[in-house]
Image 1 (tube, one colour):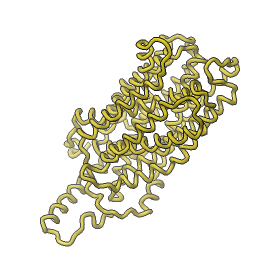
Image 2 (image 1 turned 30 degrees about the horizontal axis):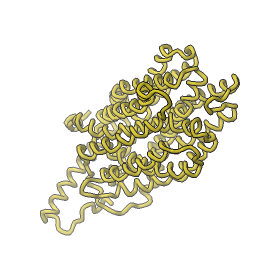
Image 3 (image 1 turned 90 degrees about the vertical axis):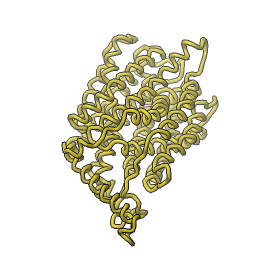
Image 4 (image 1 turned 180 degrees about the horizontal axis):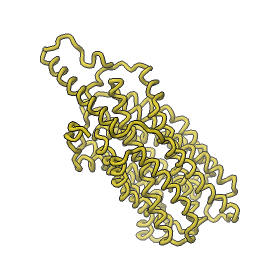
Length: 473
């Protein structure tokens, strides 16, 4: 590592924690939507699995181009409070409206209601998620520090996940008799969202790169992005690595309650163990990625996660203690997927800015976001009809035959393993390693220093007639 790279100051933990505060409500929301809300529509509101799958798939298809449009606007935004901060603030109330309408949905809703409010939810989620992802890439720029930074962010986000998962257990202990866990989760998320995003908006600085003054956005630049091997690899790996765990999450309650004999509280308890492993695992995975290479860490995580998932059906039924080690193992390695993908895409963003002379971070994260949306749609539209095909009945009180339970087990285990291993394969032969990224950052830092000097000289009248960004855009 070069002296210049070593001399680059570390980001204060206070800044990392302030940025991580915005991850708390988003992580709680993501796990609630995947684990609790979709089964709630089927079991408590009486919607068919096909109707739910069709609604989610329809929204994902309608939503496909939104992130790209938002990304282009974000990368070209210049405001007194920064480029991405304003978008994060804008997206929060839109997201909260969608959350309210989905988590507080009344009985008797149909597919049209679900599609409408899923669209609102998706728009708010896209604005907040994309702006935060793009902003995060500017907070830390060194290869090893960036891996650890995303490790800390992921660990903080896991605390939000734990908050959502603990809600049914806590509410069950406090409220005797019938109560609506999904609505309690919704109110918790609605309370956390303005608090978490407010802390980030107030206390995290945003560095705006100096070579983004030019307003031209040639189509060739965008086409260049999607042709890059690194971008294509990250896109396909993001799809596969999101579809695998998303598939598992969508079927989790069905599998652990009906196939493994756990109560709902026991199933949530095991999921908390899974997530707690991520709290410990995220900083360690970040360190491993910074030390041994992010791409190698991803390949190893995919293999280890798949091996662990093979063991889920081996432990005795309804045995919480026996199930804990497997959930710890899977949770530890699963945390690497989003963490390393974000860190690696940030590295690619630095490479693109060096070669194109413009900030394209939001657009790059939009591509992985698009992959995640396709995966979320795929996890529902593929897995739910498969459950119906094997004869599984999700409605509360329904009787499922042994054949249906065996089908549920096979669908739950085989799907995630297939997709996660496919995601790991995408990183064989990865070139943007520690050494290459250090070279890129040194070149960027040198160019940024020169541009700042020229800009200052121009403002002092030393370079009359030269436009800032001339020759870059």
